Amino acid sequence: MLPFIQTAYLFALGSMIGWVLEFFYRKFFDPVNVERKWLNPGFLTGPYLPLYGFALLLLFWLRRLENILPINDGRLRKLVLFLIMAACITALEYFTGLIFILKLKIMLWDYTQFWGNIKGIICPMYSFFWLVLSVGYVFVLDPPITSTVKYLTDNLQFTFFVGLYYGVFFIDLAISINNIVNIAEFAREHNIIVKIDELRAQIESFREKTKGVSHFFVPLRFSDTLHNSLERYREFRENFSVGALRENLKVENIRENINKNIDKIKKK
Image 1: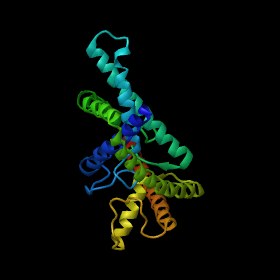
Image 2: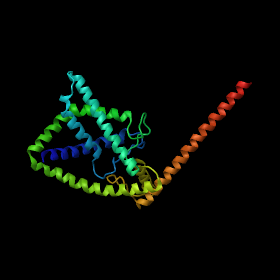
Image 3: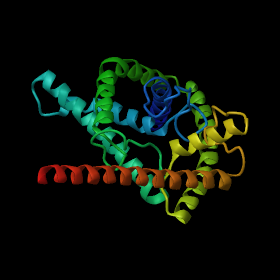
Image 4: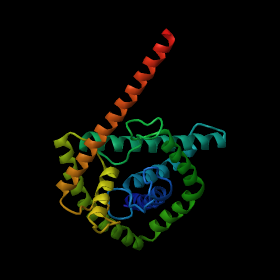
């Protein structure tokens, strides 16, 4: 029973810490959010990101395995631990993103604009962020989190609040899964990959044009029917693709003309 309570607590804590990190990152550093708006990250309503919940579980248990690493030098052992942590979270991020793309045709995040990305799911920059996060966890977060887990284990009456959290979380999850299923059906029908951030931006743009009310804590709440919102998104993707193709053709034509002029000059 106790390992289950510890796991539930760590997952909840990690999900909320991750939400806070993403919340401020999207406001001040996200290159996609050029208007620097306050955005609710993820597709859930409340302040939690499940990926970070699983990430904290990985960090917590990997930290416990540090002493079994067959490395005598303490500093080198720590470095190897940090690299293992970053690699494990990157793998978690990759397989989570890949499953959503292959099974649901939904892209929860998009790293295609970053160098060295793999299918837009992972990239070196974010793997470095995971490495920094791993270092911060070991030196800053692990001691208080370990103490809190021990306190919770010794004072089971406080598990009431963990249960309360999951009551709200699962209601939120059920509503969000319904949206995700409908989006996945639309994506399969039209053979497209729906990028959640783009879809959210389209919904927000439509609200602004129609002077609708913005819902910070309901990022995927549709101002009209879900089908209409997705149809507008599909049109946006088609127009974007055509526009990008035209720009590429223009560049190719310019290159062709330059090469022809160079050949003419050489012949003269």
